[in-house]
Amino acid sequence: MTQLDFLDGRKSVRTFDPTAQISNQEIMDILSHAANAPSGNNFQPWKVFVVKNKEKQEILKDISFKQQQIADASAVFLIFGDKSNYDIQKIMKFNLENHIISENQLTEKTSRVHTYLKLHPEDISNEGLRFDNGLFAMNLMHTIRAFGYESNPMRGTDFQKIMEFLNIPQNLEPILMLPLGKPLKAGYPHRRYPTNDFVEIIE
Image 1: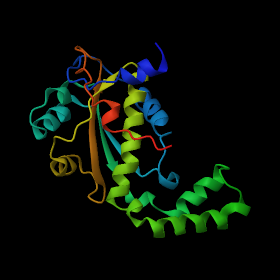
Image 2 (image 1 turned 90 degrees about the horizontal axis):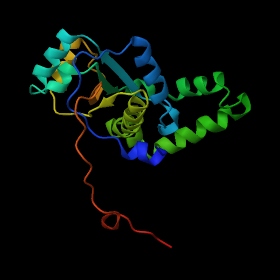
Image 3 (image 1 turned 30 degrees about the horizontal axis):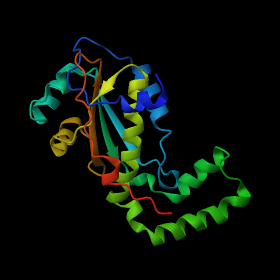
Image 4 (image 1 turned 60 degrees about the horizontal axis):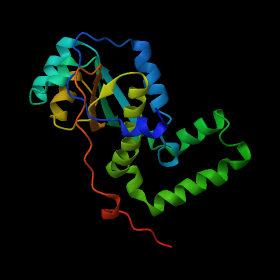
């Protein structure tokens, strides 16, 4: 299988083996790789809650219009946006500690981020959260497949009820529910608009 075959092979799977289990270590490994996704200024404004409990998954299913894949999944990832990570001082400290920048670059890099955010303040609003977390979620879906599982991105649920049920802080912005597991049936085939419908090459 080529890399393109792998990427094109992602489909939304809605029928999981309810007996298949995933270890906590696999979950952490999957999320560690997924977190290599890009984000604006490397802010990484995501927060992930992982539900791996069949009784709780049944309740999530009921909140989500009885969609069975939630109950049958090996785990359910709940992705939220965290605006507290839009913190320039925090990310610059992280960049220094991880040798991404040097002390000599700190002032210039910090000034550049401030200038950029004045130009695009929406990038640290809910709009920015959805953009950055969308990149993270897509990377997560491909990483899940690399570990031998499949997933199904969902927003067909009442996130407010989920947050109340799981005591998730109200300052977080709900982005996506992502059940994952071992597939019993193939996902829906891809049907997409032809590239000529959405591509314009400017030469």
